[in-house]
Length: 118
Image (cartoon, rainbow, N blue to C red; front, side):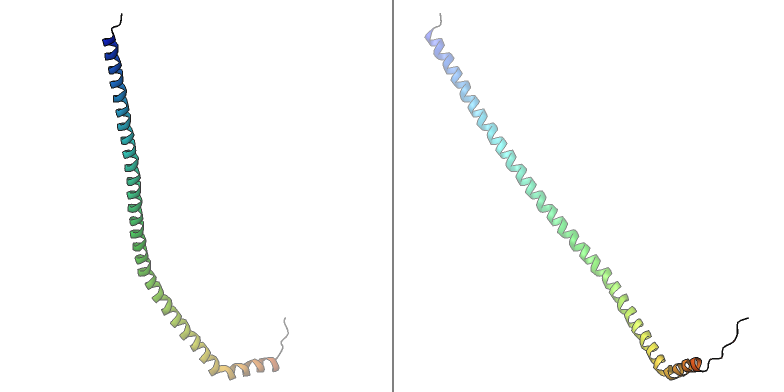
């Protein structure tokens, strides 16, 4: 036969186990919440680091681009100056010899001396 004292003791032991299980469940839940929180924080920190790295590399690239574009810009300006000078030179030569060129063209057209092809 089961003694009522044994039954009470078993019941108290079961209750203690249930309480311990509930407490363990709470601890596990807190650990999960903490882990989730830390994962979010780590992800946010990583995003910030990536953004800072990206901004740094973008600034480096813009500096590099500005430095090298400046050299190209100077070469472009120099080429434009040379082209403008050549155009002016050609225009001046055209104006200077314009009358002679027209005279020679008119002479070639009006004073044509055809020769037979053999």
